[in-house]
Length: 372
Image (cartoon, rainbow, N blue to C red; front, side, top):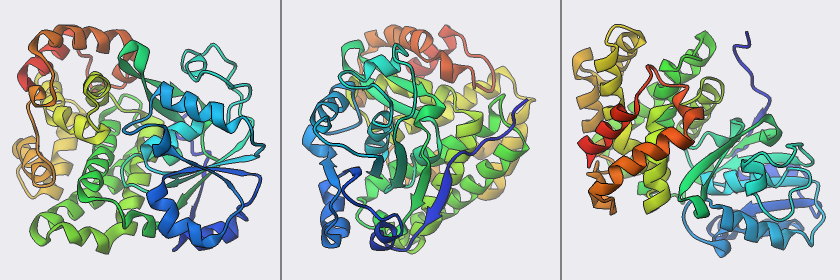
């Protein structure tokens, strides 16, 4: 039985310029990034790469429409490497661009109607501290025609190199920082109770949540600017969490968040946060004597509380960074609860297989009702 796999080489540089020189970026490279990163960090390097600015193709999280527009425009270029420099949107888009024979519609890949074969090298430079996508084999996109999100999980889209450059976090607005870091925390916690968890993934889960919770507690007391003192630590925590969930998977928190994100364009980390503790309290009700006992004991040490208060204290801590909102605050309607539950059962079995305990359709519906 396979326990652990990491196919990606991890590199670290103090500046983008050091990375560009070390990797000899040039005219055979396609760089997918954002203008707000290009201007301060890349423009001065006078690189001859082919640059794509993601925001020119749409705002928000990645969608099949956004990917297809970019796919159409890059057909005129010849390149050997795809270099993703950005957050989850940029990374998830870029992963599809290494596939052989993908020319018109990324849905062919998500539906696995295309043979998934890697044709180009992929280098990922994350500029947030949450996605962990630089070390996973997963790309997530909103499928506009279906009104939901879908995930493609295949080793053909794994990055060859993940490059950590802490300075690239500096321009991240606080809310985006908080949402992405909360996402990393959830990756670590969900992976810890996954049926696929093992001693290797547990090490990375614990390393990740220790850093994230410590930084969050200090931000709560010292203010938002404290994050600038620990940029390297937080991007490493995200990486650790990515390694954990890349091997053990994430479960119902992510599964339930996808319809909300797909229908109402709620940022991924923020959507996950709305379901985080409620899902784990539901787990505990269904099986209070399993690994969740160990999880609560370990989290209690980091949160400085009793194990029985872990989920309340977690909400207290995270709400100091971003608000936890009723689902109707995002525009969700009460009559959508049943449809959202059906959508999770129909489209998210890949994630539900990683649950601590099995959740029925009624369990999922009841979580939506409680949070509405």
